Image (cartoon, rainbow, N blue to C red; front, top):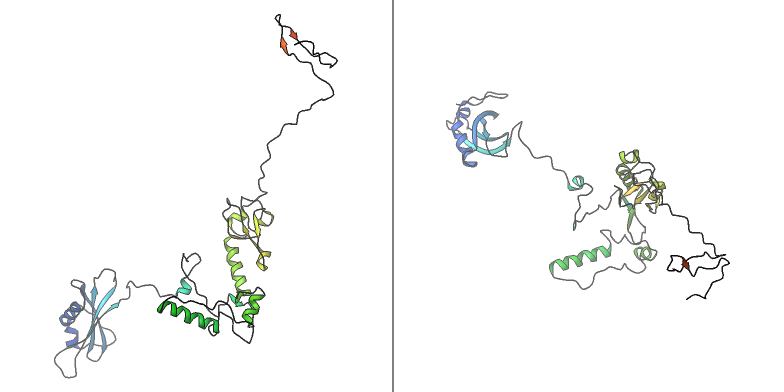
Length: 308
């Protein structure tokens, strides 16, 4: 019998000695060569003992094969109850499962991915309200019901000729669409604060780039303003050389690409030539044989046309 320890109570002698029976059962359940040494026994009850064997399977470090044996009252033979693979105190375990909604991080979405939002998402609130009909994207609305049925028919039976894309005339959804309020839900105050905190953390005044910047984005010519209440504190950077190009930045953010941080001086331009149009300057047309000038203009400015 292998060395064994007991817990809480004294094990049944015959059950504790049934190591070979337990090993045979573990080897039948496991792959060949993965059942290791006998490491422990656990008293489960009267005449019920579990034998633990080391597991040598790759990827199951610290796991143990547990084989439970039992003996009936006044019986001389030990019977097999069950064989399972259980993790030990230092077993390698998979991390605790986390729902996808909690695992998702900004930037995880790729082309073709769809991110559903819950009906009671705290970041959203109704864009318009009305008691005569639910919003068009509500689960109980007629438009949504027809759309779901049409999509089911498209998947099971083929293409659908018509889809209900226009809300019922006279409904709250139709009136809202006519007024330009096509969004059934808009950002709530909580959603605005969450977005502002996220943008402030990425491109805000406390970032190292902003701390070393010569000026803030509020005075930068590359800042493209945005509308709504968020436009009072944020804008979009339009400087292709800035690390925040195309990103929403705080007005208190800044970088070395500020439009007025280092304005390059213009190249010096020479002064325009001064032309005196009140007189003519004499100049030679050609040289004579002796090297003298011929046909020079008279000093009084009258042109001499006698020489050819």
